[in-house]
Amino acid sequence: MASSGGLKWRRILPFLSSRYGSCSQSKGQIRSITYMPRPGDGSPRPVTLIPGDGIGPLVTGAVVEVMKAMHAPIYFETYEFSGKMDKVPTEVIDSIKKNKVCLKGGLATPVGGGVSSLNVQLRKDLDLYASLVHCFNLPGLQTRHDNVNIVVIRENTEGEYSGLEHEVVPGVVESLKVITKFCSERIAKYAFEYAYLNNRKTVTAVHKANIMKLADGLFLESCREVAKKYPGIKYNEIIVDNCCMQLVSRPQQFDVMVTPNLYGNLVANTAAGIAGGTGVMPGGNVGAEHAIFEQGASAGNVGNEKLVQQRSANPTALLLSSAMLLRHLQFPSFADRLEQAVMKVIKEGTFRTKDLGGKSNTQEVVNAVLQELA
Image (tube, rainbow, N blue to C red; front, side, top):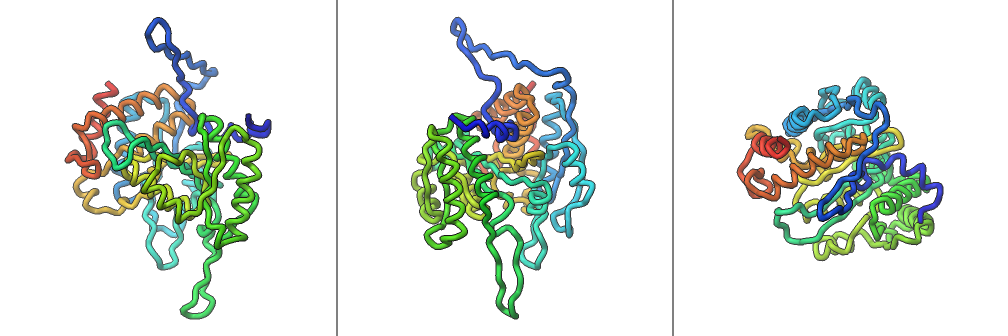
């Protein structure tokens, strides 16, 4: 049983919790339990939309088309800007703060050159402290490992991503890793509360405390303290290099994983590759007040000009992320319909993009999803 203080954490977990539409058996048939909305719950909700760079406009356009066809009770406020800009436009931040929720395509981050990542800026400005990537086997999609169902929860605001770098003398650069007890406890509570609400059995903390004894030691200490408040959930620890080896050899052993910032990026992408690739893994970034939904694992294909020219980017990840968005906004039936349609298209296998072994372009996959929704 979670502590009474866990209630405040549940208020920021709606998009991550299990489906509202649980079912019961009655005379051999499945009957959905009625969802009881509050007055006004069906009013259309504004969502900030950031198409982003590269394939971003293509896959966000796919989501907009599907949402329109579903008559989903949301509408988009679109802001077009590039990750190559110096900073996120003020009006974009204001829109997300007003709407509380955002759907985002990938923003390109130049490698080197001292240009800050606008993805990181968004997380910091909005205090989106928890990143969640759900890596799981999709029905009908063959992968090297079966029965993979991993949730990677990553601290999103500090660690090596703090941006504290400087040149000490020419040819010598110092980059600082910042770990605080406050942020470590906060992400640990989030991970355990997620496990508690979703009937998950195990939380594994990923670290390198054998070398970074103070920084990662503080992270582990915080996780251990939080774990004591959740006796019904098993708690494990694993060194990050062993974690990567275990992921590629026996990923089924992992359930919920909680990590500092950099390790989470590496672990989530590894887990996504094992379960089917970055093109199908949904994710989101959440804070106490705001949430941004985007492709779960690293959008390494954002700047793939070939995908843009051929209009063949895989829209699956962002479609599933938008289902998470719908559930976050408490529109569970729309989320379920969308997820089921996407899963059925993947399972049937007729319309798949190249990364999944098919020959379809983005629009053909979208058309197949629309056909299932009809």
